[in-house]
Image (cartoon, rainbow, N blue to C red):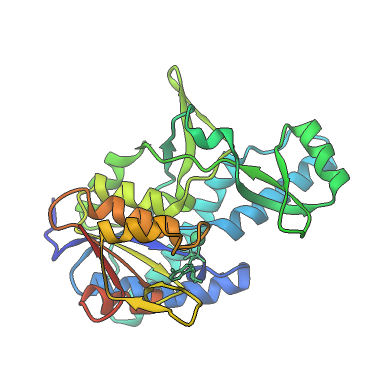
Length: 315
Ligand code: ADP
Ligand code: MG
């Protein structure tokens, strides 16, 4: 049975929605659940995508230590991403359940879909891996790991060496039809966590690749694929700025996709943080009629949907 909703919203949750460690995550998900239930309570269909940087880092480090101490095969990064999706999904499911009960609302079905996303093995990103993951290493350890594990390692801003992986563009959400039918049925779906598990087609087999897909790019693809009305990227700032951090800083209420691309070209948005969000917003907003992307603070999700704050990106 298909339920009817006020609108369909894909929410992308950033680092501050989950915290940096186990304890922080337990606290942070409570605020995150409030922001999400606010939208569900208003009658919107909601799909949730989240980042996984700190979590996948911890899992990856632990599995690397384990392989080291037991002289066993290292766990592939793709498996670490799958583990992080399940762990984070568990915490979000749990926090949502509690928030519905706190509001004396009926608890809807809530589920996490472990999601694979196909990438192009010829993606240019594979030629220049740039995303640092896992622990910091000294030079000797880094070079040894590069030799024995085939890792690509790079010096990271004077803080030591880290493994770097590629961040290819997401092409196809493998579990899309499962996600769609669950969401349209009124289930709250958590999916594409950490940008999805990157896979490439090898004949009939989908093979995991050591890469990290940007979660904002994955959220934009999901929003396009499920026919969402709104993509809302929830992060640590209430609005997008030009002249960010300078005396000419100007916070923006609205941006056209054209203006956004021009500012992006001018270098207004930092590459590892705001740029991927703005590009994801432009990708979604330019994908059809009446598609709105928003960037705002986690706590302001409801206000942004109701036009009271945030930066709105439209075509
Ligand atoms: P998330 O974990 O939500 O993905 P990021 O830290 O990656 O968050 O990106 C959000 C951050 O981007 C903000 O906290 C802010 O410090 C930074 N930022 C960089 N450029 C801008 C800009 N032009 N306007 C607003 N924030 C910006
Ligand atoms: Mg980020």
